[in-house]
Image 1 (cartoon, rainbow, N blue to C red):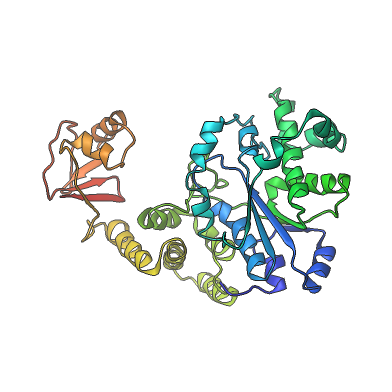
Image 2 (spheres, rainbow, N blue to C red; image 1 turned 120 degrees about the vertical axis):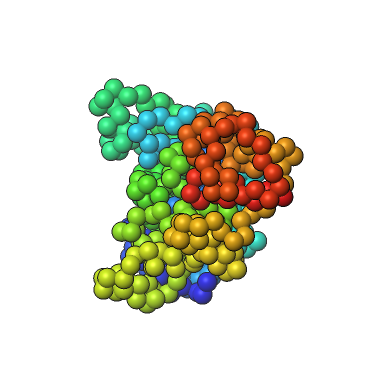
Length: 389
């Protein structure tokens, strides 16, 4: 990625800026800014929706500013319901630890973590006492919290809103105080929490941070990309799965994905947009998009292989020439499906087989007790192939 211009910092993948005039002045001064992004590990996977603010953090990093990434290991246990229509369940400490196993490895696909400040917000939040929490709470009214659109809807239909949820914005806001953030990046669903950071910085005698608010992107089913809905393209997906998932995205999202989720030159993206307006098959532009995304999170060779695999399996409806090799410990069909992680359990494997979702050598197999042999090509659905060795 090349160093972005000030215009790039303030426009690409940005929905709103608060306070724009102040931030523009800060950028003109060419003084490095402390730029914060926090993400709660509520899932073990980061996805392309999360990549939008992560890429923006990387933009600031490339422009010479100090990137600060906060892992919300404490706030993940509380649960932010900013984008939820019901109360988000609290996570246990063990669940959060499990989700953290590869978190920074995924962040590192975008942000240079060796040059960034990395914090876990349990560092300061676990030590706050009631006196300090009450001081923070006094800066806000209950009315301002319940007037938020999703909270208001829940209350109108008699839904539960826990006091735990009310406290969440204080915690995210205090993160900004703890790291002395000058700029915070977050999604449009985080607007209330981002503004809370400005209020708490005033309370603690700090200059309020400016805000870069990023848009939310739709996933493979057209709804907002969310791990809760399973419509995500994850940063640690295999090249083949990542490519196929991007190809499932609606055609009307192609240019949005190019602009927000890649850092391909905007002039090049304008060319793609013009081609689409001129009637080029959207599939061809989407193939290039999928290759670009897989190249970023894997490499160009794997992106080319994923492209060829996709074309062979989906477009030409053929078995690929070189499907992944797998040597099972047991050659009965259900065991192979589970051991290869094509399905999570024997019960799910049995249902899949009985419903006609498994082929061997191109033929549907309905017998859960079917025995496989070395050299057989196993197919699950349309996209997943294994050659047994």
